[in-house]
Length: 406
Image 1 (cartoon, rainbow, N blue to C red):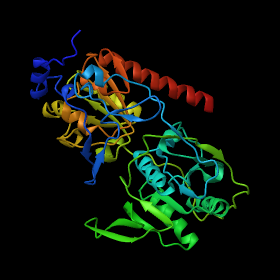
Image 2 (cartoon, one colour; image 1 turned 90 degrees about the horizontal axis):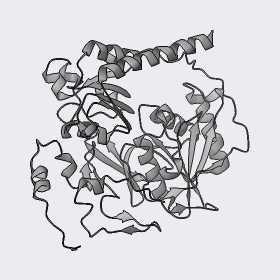
Image 3 (cartoon, rainbow, N blue to C red; image 1 turned 60 degrees about the vertical axis):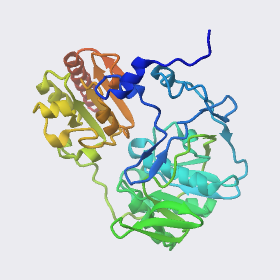
């Protein structure tokens, strides 16, 4: 067979035709893109591939820029193992672990810690309570310390500061890194800095040449200062670890954590109406599109799941949902941990809007639509039947939970 690469005029026509349903699949792999904070993000796997020995290779065959079938084929790669037998020092990271898993902000933080650790240091991750994460190794964690116990459950910043002080006394990290976020890291970091008597570097988006560069002046200016021991980092502070896997060896404290006399009482979570949650802040979004025929059933399913409702542009234009519920590049860019798309085919603008979602579940009749290709879990079938079965499953689960509690 000839080795001459043949042109495919039909594929070229589809790549030019933005209205064709296969238009997005024919586009070349995106190597870099603009992040939400205006920082250019690069895809380390965009050019070339990882060889069997963990070495990055350049693909000159044109397969990665060609047909969609070659690009979408999943190839499992064994990343090279990064080991630090006897660390010269530690870089300690306290991730938020919202929902018990590493968020994209946490992974950026671990990437920054990996840069500060270099070859001689080790990244020590400190996690409070039970977690559901099983990818610490590929996120860049060399040592994992889990502080569990009822004293760390719920909102207990004072007790958590005591735990971090015990870690500081035993491991003496060169730097402490916490996410400067509204989900706990920002407050915990400032409390911990006050306890240590340190002046933290806040809203840091870059560490370069022994300087921390943070946002100031309502985000319009940059403030540079020498690298602090305690750093509260912003989103996209560094590239996440993607080319190495780490040991994530479990470690323990040699002494018990001192109990603090808490001046704060946690009364538990407050029920919030999912409809009142802004789309950009929602963690669980149940979104409907042109394939939804029974919107009353759709609303009942969203209420049963306790999810925030969203919609595609077609559903909004047809008047089934309000304009502020539109998801996509022409609506709201969302970062939900779970995004359920019901009857949404997956236009390129919609796929761009859900690009930062962790898990995507698609319910659709068409197994070849773009949303099915994007989804982590797909259910092929009539949406009405699936939603009714979903409501029945949720009610059965809650009835069993009530029966067990009684």
